[in-house]
Length: 146
Image (cartoon, rainbow, N blue to C red; front, side):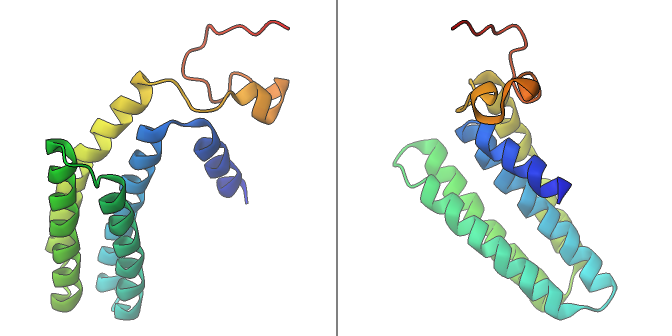
């Protein structure tokens, strides 16, 4: 329950780049979970993790539906990762999921950097009350006056 609460706070207080970073974090976690499931012979779990990953990749393709070069590149990467996770599931090959992780990690790091550079989309003091004011702010020296 505590993890869910932290996740809700993070979603409510991050910006668009932070939300995309969270999707990449989950994709990487799914790849790691697929590797563990293959090692333990739980191939149905691999299918479930891959189905969830495909949902995330579909969301990323939708979010980057623009005509600019960055959107096009991110859509192509998402399609390629989808192909790789399918191949990893069919072949039950852990190294394919390692390749996915090596592709997704730089994207995650880039969006985390963008998250820090942009202001959050919500003010935590208003959302969670005065006690949690500094808990999720990126810039520590903000002041609020009534």
